Length: 445
Image (cartoon, rainbow, N blue to C red; front, side, top):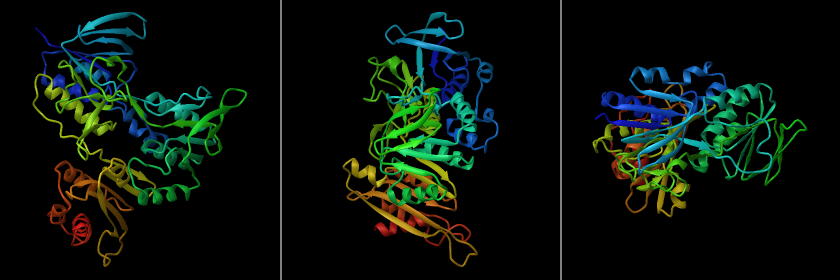
């Protein structure tokens, strides 16, 4: 009997799972249901597209329904899954083009439904020119509306918000960035790093309105947005982009499998949910976060692609373990190259952990070289065990790969002592005789 695999949602994780499953189980009957008319859109590229760095948005798709069909996968675009019954292993589906409803069954279900932007329930949210930033149609809307907008407000100072702000500023717009935390990129970086970043944005005329929450929007007589009201003031804007975070799209399985309070599906290290026939991957899931050893909701494309691939590998039995994540990420803001992994000092203290840190600001290579730039590196570690739990780097030269190295250190539970004497190369073009990471280790010791 042929194994029937149903995949709900063709996101990063879904695409990775489907392509791998088609290779590993050529006999299986794989059916994909996707409510949009496109798949595999790299939303991290939206700001690049808006800013004109990536001219053609088509390049931001890395798979097409035709490619999946070529693998023998039945891809149903514009099909919305209305209900799932995990006991009966059945799905209720609506064809959005015809309105027709039908049911399908599965042996294995793969939930890669991703996430959806959080939309606050507030006065004026329905006004025209208030847009989300997640999928392909959003990116097209933003570009089209930005052409006619002079003043743009971006709400939410995470990675996507910051990248959009930079793109809009480079298009010559007047930009306001609003966030309810007291500084930008609060989740990713400590104050020493966000201060420099904020200065770089302000130097280009961007208004930073942190430490305030949006309360409502008021519009023009034509129903277009005109003013953003916050707990601290008001800002004129003829285009508003909401980037206040994401929530997992998991309502279909509510009450049927184990989840975090925010609805993120809990999976084990083999991507299995609490129901043995249901697998999940990507932004709809919680992942094992190595710095704390707990499950956390960390929606990143990198996590999604890894998890989707692992679903395929473990579909018929536990084979390849997920090693957990450090939430490693990077961003380029004007001339600064920035990356972080694991916990910030702020996050570790908020979690009640007893931590210390080493922060080094140093020229990245010998002063006898014709040019050299400053780099700031911060490593956060547990006071008692000396285990590394997080790190951040910022410099005008690109030293972001050092954060990938520290991600491996955190994943392997390494201590500051061990970091002190790891074998790193020295070459005057690139670094100093004592590598920056060694120096941080030695300074802690």
